[in-house]
Length: 206
Image 1: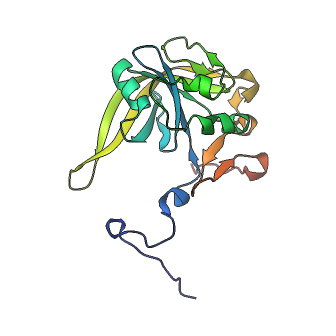
Image 2 (image 1 turned 120 degrees about the horizontal axis):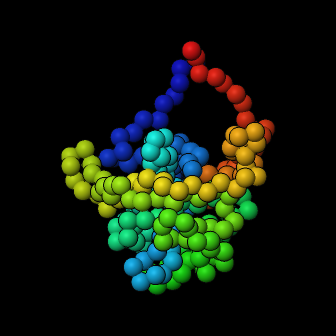
């Protein structure tokens, strides 16, 4: 049976009810980024364009649609913290996605308990089992294939300090399932968690 393909060129639109890209490239880990403004105001916001980019040194990156508070704070201070979103923290994470004024403390808004970081100024989420303290390495404005600048900003940071709840470690290995990590799906409201039932093993050849 021949496959019936829906083909489109993004420059002309997708022709569907909803843009399929964020549903196809999914689930995506969430960059729950805490920062501090120059005046000391705490900020935390989730970004679904996020990932680990390098092992050694550990580099992580998140991309922001628009020059938002998180990007402005990182540009000014050179520091941020990534906090792992877990199922018990999902609703609080969602609350921090609200568009609020820069002077609003989103830790207070979402009723999050903050814990001081060791090496950077921004606090981490006390109830998150994993946090990366990061220092900025690159801040890149993204461009189209023609070189036209977009209002899209890629922030890359080196993790200089990593916190792991020891309950997530078994026999010296971090067990992903134990943290109940939450990832972003497609559409306006889809999220996913990782469970033991979904896990399978596959070794690399050689």
